[in-house]
Image (cartoon, rainbow, N blue to C red; front, side, top):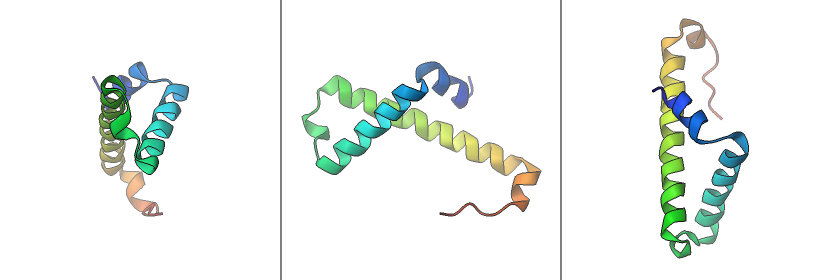
Length: 75
């Protein structure tokens, strides 16, 4: 199964935003270690799924000829 399909099956938009916020908040406040084991595991799994999705997006972009002529996209 493609990473995009797998991600969309496991996470809806609202859930994805909630997980991103939890990850960011726990990283900034240092609360990650105090969260229940299951919640930490879920957050790490979400991160791994998101990482796979991003890798797939950029792989696809590199394979698309017209994407090579656009700007670099650096922020």
